[in-house]
Length: 124
Image 1 (cartoon, rainbow, N blue to C red):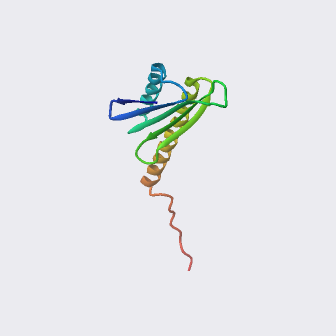
Image 2 (cartoon, rainbow, N blue to C red):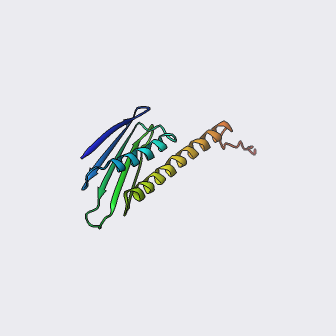
Image 3 (cartoon, rainbow, N blue to C red):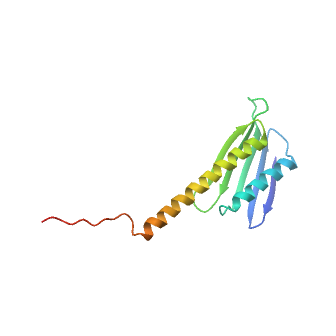
C-alpha cells in the first residue's frame, strides 16, 4: 500500500508499507523527520519503505531514498520499533549530508587558496 503527501517547498514524500497496514502516527513521524532533514539539504522527494521482516519476530525494516541535487542519499535500518529504525536511518542520512557539505567546504577552501600547487625551482 502506498501513501502520498506533499510538503511545502515542493518536496514530495512517498511512504510505502509492506507486510503491515499504514498508520497515521507512523506517517506523521516519518514526515516530521524528513522535514527536519529538508532544512539541511535541498530534498526534492523522499521515498520511504517501511516493512515488517518476516523472518524476525516484530522487527521493522525502514529504507529511505532522498532525491537531492547530485547523488541521492539513501539509508536502511532495522529495529524492534518503527521509531528506532527511523532514527537510525535519519542519523545515517544526517551523517551523509554533513560529510558531503564538509567535502564541499574543503574543496572551496582549497580552490580559494589556489590549491596545493607548490612551484619548485629547477636546478640547472
